[in-house]
Amino acid sequence: MAEKEIELQETSSVPNILQEEIELAIKTQRDNKAPGPDGISNEVLKPAIQTITPILKEIFNDIINTEIIPQQWTKSNIILLYKKGDQYDIGNYRPISLMSNLYKIFAKVILKRIERKLDEQQPIEQAGFRRDYSVLDHIHAVRQIIEKYEEYQLVYYIAFVDYSKAFDSLVHTNIWEALKEQGIEQKYIRLIRNVYKTSSACIQLEKIGDSFEIQKGVRQGDPLSPKLFSAVLEMVFRRLEWENLGLNIDGSTLTHLRFADDIVLFAKTPEDLNIMLNDLASESAKVGLQLNPEKTKVMTNGNKSSINVGESQISYVEDYIYLGQLISPKDNINKEIERRIANSWKRY
Image (tube, rainbow, N blue to C red; front, side, top):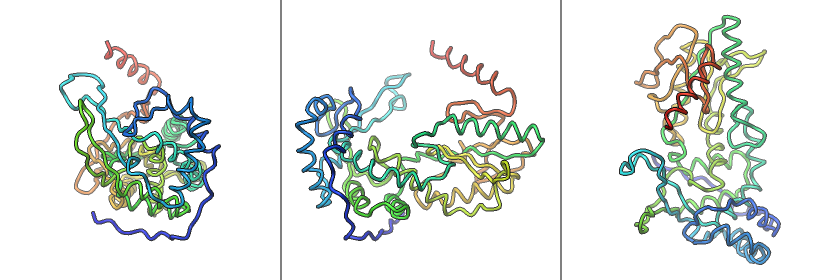
């Protein structure tokens, strides 16, 4: 996919970074975390906070003014964390990306400055990576919709959308486009873009392997990544023309709910849901996100008419695990208790 160039003004400026901003960022760093390529741990930074923050203030402001990113900040070491099962099966390991702690402090300062503006651009339908929002909000909303539509004998079609490796797939230029569209100061966009321009990683096992370029996706472990992803997803949804679609909820129309990349679509008919799924798949593909038809599921109390995304047929289900909770039209509580008991036994 060819990347388009996003024009950014060179004249935009932002306030210098204050020592208090750096201190706050250091204090929020978690302990007992492996350091990145710079070898600097949080246990080293925190006791030296009064000594190091004036030095970091000078370094950070120089970076803000010149927009030159230290090369070490663009590098990540990827380690493999064992989960469970056969230790000789690579599928039983989770990759963890370790990056410079100094970069993460800088990124947290930038995040604090742009976070409010980005959150203001997010609709109430998006609850992921936001303060005062919870997975419970969306779980309760989905269950209430099903319960009320069943009670009043109204037909609903609900699609639980799955993306293939969503956070690893975004086209970088769409990140800058989304940030610009949502009013972020262009100097901040250029700084983030400069980090990504030369971003690379290497596998760290018994020794560190050769580095490779990161050409797409948001950086794992980067404090900015969740907000960058949400900004791009918001740009995708703004392109969708769904004014006459969705379900009626107390006089308002609800087309979808979002929790990060966990998306639920609501429709009155299978034809409407078919349109919505294909619209979403088409617009998502433009930013590098690929809808996964095999893992995308539909739940309904109506006729199970054929629903397709492209050439792939979407399966109907009687229940679905959404944000870690069982969603089912019938006997939610007992089914959820049974599921949790079964999962507990699997651990022994």
